[in-house]
Structure formats: structure tokens, C-alpha cells
Length: 191
Image (tube, rainbow, N blue to C red; front, side):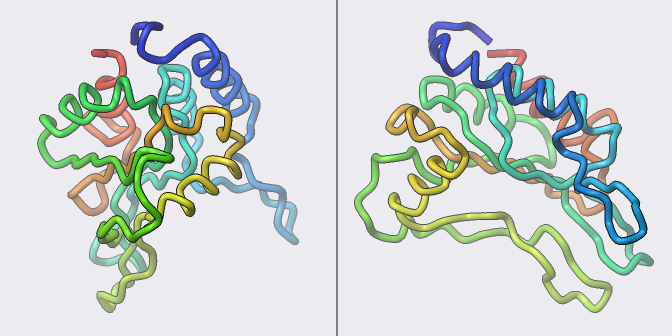
């Protein structure tokens, strides 16, 4: 990814977040039995670090586990921030990939305080078919700006967009060849 659309401050923040992931930042504190866990399998950690290093700061992700026989089925997704200057090229690159859909929820600070009329997608289903979780989507510019602030990205207000990328296929692991994390990484590399 070229430095011009992003700026050195954004790239420095991306490098910092990538290092945090590599240093074990995605591993949750031990549970009552002393077991460490993470929302994403260790095989996905390096890919998420690469995604951050390449300019997409991730805020949330899911690797896409399960089959019809398991208790839940997941779609892989990644939710985060990307500079608006790179947004159109990124969305075009990802959306040309079969079975993966990307969209910008809202550029921070550029919409009035009305709902953005965006509907979230189910990403985890119980065996019964009940939706367990949905993509983390927000409606107003104020809510999105607050998320940027919570992610310590408020200084980039007006120059970044909140982006969701979702695998349309249930149960495809994001870190496998052709999986969502690889698709996102390759799209960022192509910019």
C-alpha cells in the first residue's frame, strides 16, 4: 500500500497495532481454570497483524467456524478502520473476490446525525437457526465518531471510514487459503 493516501501518522499507528497483535494482544486473560483463549485461532493472529500493518486497523473479527452439526456456525468477518483515500480501491479489490462482501459503514464525521440506513448481517447462527451475533454496525455519525474515539483513532476523524468485510460462506475459516483474512490482506497488498 502506498504511503501517500494514508500518511505517516496512520501507518505508524498501524505498525503499533500490528506489533500489539504479534505480542499476544488478542489473547484474553486466563479463565477460572487458567486457560488462555482468543476470539481468533492463533493461526489467524499473524494474518490480522499483517492486515493492520498494511493499513486496515481491525477492531473486531471472527474466524468463521462450524458446520451444520456443531452448536453454532459462523461467517468470518473483520470490522475496522481504513483511510478514506484508500477506501474505494480496497472495496473494489475485495468485492471482486467470490463469496466475500465489503462495505463502508460510514466515513467518520461526514454524515448528519441521522441513521445511515444500514442493516447488519448475521455472522453466528445457533443450530436451531436463531441468530446469535451480527456484524457490529452503528447508525449515526456520532456513534461512529465515538467508536473511533474509543479505538483511540479520534485524531483521524474525517479521514477514515469504518469498514466491514464478511464472508458469505458459513464455516469457511478466515486463515485458510481463500479465506477472508487472506482476501483482505491480498486486497490491501494490491493498493
